[in-house]
Length: 213
Image 1 (tube, rainbow, N blue to C red):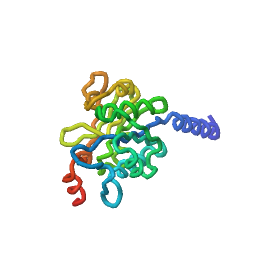
Image 2: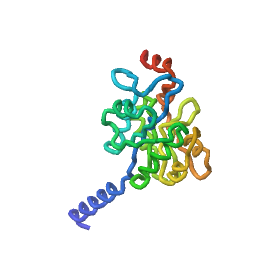
Image 3: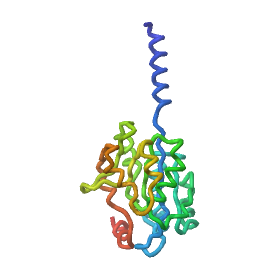
Image 4: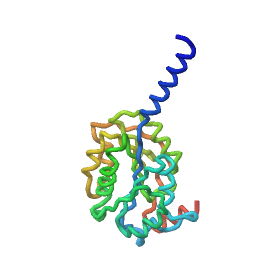
């Protein structure tokens, strides 16, 4: 094989690899009623911006232009706090039923154009794009492999789910959330260490502690 032909072949292979790069969408959950906080927590400021924006900025770092924001409680205030960082905004009228309904409606919206979906919580402001990239890089591409954040021997969000999990995620309801899939024998789970995933905001005291860091 001459050098020119070899270079053309290598270029074709590179283009083929680029064309088959998995499509990963991000879903940020922001529909909850913030009962423990006593106010709409995701609109509260942390380091100069609404709490929600920290999660959305991280999501845009891994899935630019393809970030889905699920809203419910106090939706107008949440949408305003998002400041156009959510590319696809979905209203969950059943948000009172629990987080499962928000996951289901978000996954249903992105299942046809995604090879995997990253699910983030709007109240984890310490999560950044670097950690989300670590989750993506850890994924082998296998359709039965889930990649979850790990801290203190706990597995939790953000979590990357492959397309094989989409149907199960679309059936979720109530407060169980997606963690039940982590113990499902149909899937293997790859943990990625993230000390920052332990920081979420449920109460005003949680937010005060983050301000002090």
